[in-house]
Length: 137
Image (cartoon, rainbow, N blue to C red; front, side, top):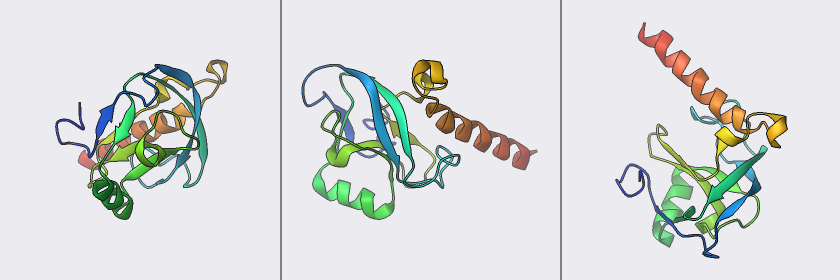
């Protein structure tokens, strides 16, 4: 929806296999200087589940190259998952204030679920919100 509304670059399409994908996948953090990834380190590998049939990120080659050059790729799959261009799993707007994410960090917040890596993304958001609330006070 955010992609189609023009808030994020690219669009989401049906998975390349035309099948619903539901499994834990590896992600590599491409940027750690955003409100979504401040608790991560660049290059860090996270394990977070995907659960989608329409999660394949697509952008034309020129746009994908621009996003790479602008540092707007936030997370990348460590293996092919759904056919996303460049194995992109997360992309942000130019300002770094909006992120589109295909995996589900909220389903990876406790080792009992298989991974707690999603908590790093959620904690990054909470920390950023606190900092902005304090600055506004």
